[in-house]
Amino acid sequence: MKETEKKMTGNHSCRFRWRRVIELVSGITLLACGCAIYLLFRSKSIRLYQWFEAAGFSDVLVAARNVTANISLPDIIVYSLPDGLYCAAYILTMDAVWMYEHCGKRFVIVCFVPVMALIHEMLQGLRLAEGTFDWADFTFYAIPLILYFTFSKETFFTKPKLNLQ
Picture 1 (cartoon, rainbow, N blue to C red):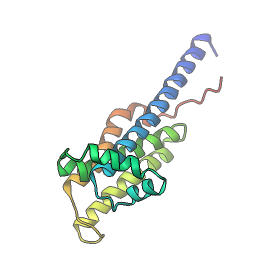
Picture 2: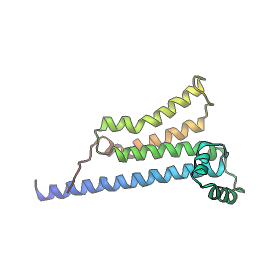
Picture 3: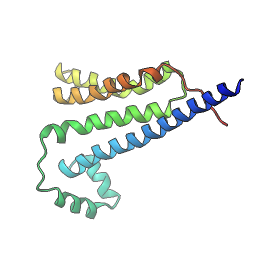
Picture 4: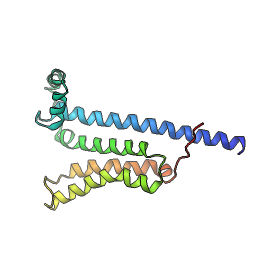
């Protein structure tokens, strides 16, 4: 292999390594934002709130909810956006974790949860699944998937070379 080819392979691998780190950090950040909205603005009866209480964070939750008590967010932010953030977090995290896999396998893994969420929402609209259909929920599930394919199409169908140098 020529020296320039080695250098290009190394740069290519480094680019994917940084992309992986950025996707993981972004995924964790989006997940944290969705959880924060749930914990601060939704009912205390949600399971996530109960998990945080069981982990001993009751005082922190009460203090944080007191600080945000006078903040009024639109329902679409409180009830629909968190699910979209979770969906985006899943897509980014799975793409980072499965980055070095064949594009077909990665495609199925990355798309599975968002597509299931979209199908479930449609089934709610047809009254074949429990819950209430909501266009906002459907939109917030679809947007991360659309953005993912829009911005990653040049790298999605190419498998990065694993460079262990």
